[in-house]
Amino acid sequence: MNLCSSGHDEICFEGHGCPMCKLIEGHEGEIDTEKDEIGKLSNKIIGLEEDIEKLTDENIELKEREANRG
Picture 1 (cartoon, rainbow, N blue to C red):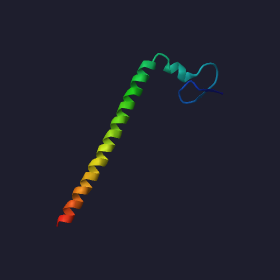
Picture 2: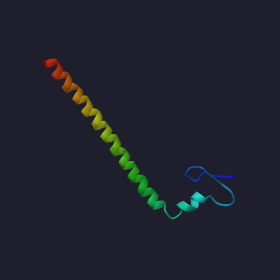
Picture 3: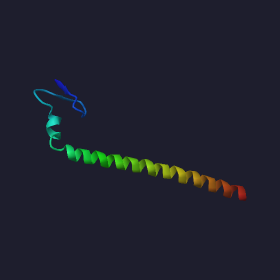
Picture 4: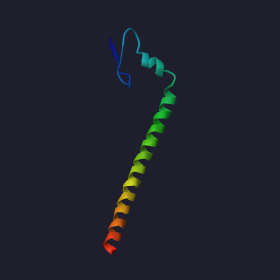
């Protein structure tokens, strides 16, 4: 058994050449594009989570103000 460490998850294989390397070959541009999209979406998720936290805090403050009024 051989282990490939060419930047993708380690793949065990027998014989010559990693089968994952063969599958990836020629698709590097597509893979990079998808990784970029994943990064953008991850950043968007983080931003949305921050928005939710902010709105939740504002909602709590408003409820506390209303409770204190009456």
